[in-house]
Image (tube, rainbow, N blue to C red; front, side, top):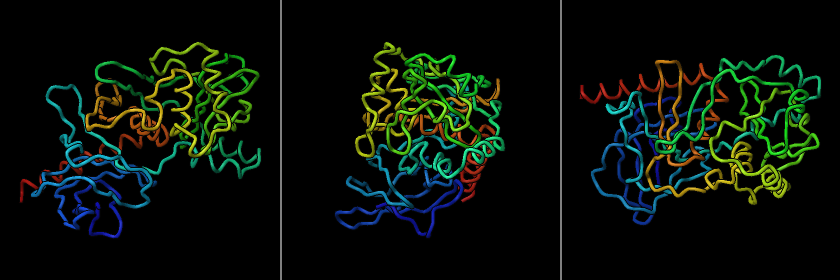
Length: 338
């Protein structure tokens, strides 16, 4: 059982004293110099680095924390222990090992929940206040080992729902964007309709209704996997309409839409076995000369982090990363002083 000596976990990255309790024997072991970063207000946490334990530990253990909803079944030996400063002498940019220990982020649902309580007039006013700015998007790329499997350039044009309808073809992937919200993905199936995952249910709705006033764009080429034939993409989407809750295999609208188009199990929940290795890299491009790399165990984890960055925007990601690196440097300096 992972516990700590404070009532609440820290709001920023800092050194925290944690204890690991063997649920079979009750023995309590101390985890020293455990660095934790809280990424957002929804209690998603990333474990960055631990020092060695004085005594060996063995599973099973239960991890507990604020609002725990998802666990990854890693033992201590599988926790990433790369340099928290993220510097690798063999790479041209900083790198940090990342593993999602638990999360209660279910993608779009919480972000879209407020729309059902607005009238059409209020919806328009709400989106007018939050005009989407393509310049606040963070350019990024995803690599599996050395292969680039996803790449987004900044400044991609967005269209009104009506204009988007004139360009869509069955099987196209659509992304609806708005400032401060997770991007919402959907599969165009023809006849002005899309299939999408929303509020833990796969639905078939008109494109203009799904947009909810947001601008959108066709995003077929973001992922570099080979696409299925259009008829197969549409069939994949329509076959799952009505699926909900425990029948779902996808964590968010992007994973579902991408699975429909490419058919890869990596987009499904638990589609990849977590064995401690981190073959995926998310490269964040802040400028021509400044980039940062995070490492992940699964494509699902990468997508969750990428979507979080999309939601908070480039400026917030830049500030968050700066705060983290400054804090970890302070922690290392304190160790040398001791």
